[in-house]
Length: 386
Image 1 (cartoon, rainbow, N blue to C red):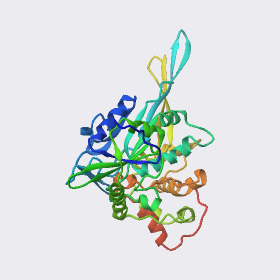
Image 2: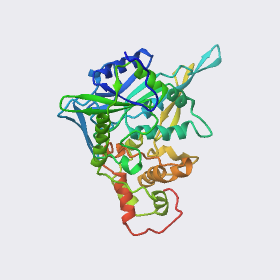
Image 3: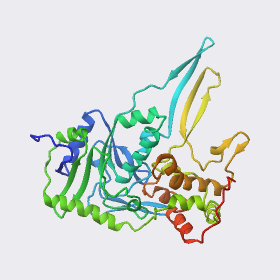
Image 4: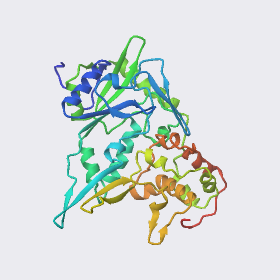
């Protein structure tokens, strides 16, 4: 065991095998450790108990409408890009029971869902996901009304980031300023460095929680050579990102092209399935559903994810406001990249590329925005939904 506890801002070296001690330390401290696992032919967050649970030697190939696993030529534990799940799946769950109502002797009793939020440690979190969590913090915790479910889950979480070494073909975090290297928001940040005869990690300490976790692990001071190699890993990752997105002025561009014919073009391809909103790490829309048993003595209220691509999402009074696929896609993209700035002071996109890879039609929002830029200026209108 190390004689000294690491301090915030320091960087140390751990061997690959020492990662097991870090996982065990998190488990002993009462965390449910969630990290990358291979599940349903994808690398996705799942329970981690040992190094063997990690996707050693696997990576992912991603393109518009395409995701597939591929074997690597080395034993990297984190040599892949983001999968379909993000922190949103656990901090802002897809469905959760709000309360139960029970009728006894003619009287209803409300039982609130006040169970303790799970205490979780997330291993393998990428820089774009940290940025997305920051966006959801702004929306769900830092606004006028706070979401208690999200707040409790966020407060009970620890984040072990891993700097990205192998971006996918749909990543554009460099255009959004969110990666590939984690800058803040983590307890520990790891960079995996693999040499001919070495497999080690540079570990940066970002919080007191991270320092406590690392204290139970064998580590040594990071050498200048390891720091240099760590910088090379993320520098190579940054150079490998080919997809670009011109973010400057996009909020105004979308507002000024409300009736551009490009919206009809993308609507002819869009299935309005909502996949993009489900995998997006910042989308937060929900609906509430009530259900009861056949006796009428037991009822439950559930909160579930909703999507602006659903026909009933914009239902008010006489019916839905956005009847066409065109109007619903336009609402999603314009909110994400334009109106989000008006509401929350930042973009709703972090450049993770999930909406591109997991769109069955292969629609690419970077391509759609580029097409709007390239086309002749459209007539400015104040048109409404369709």
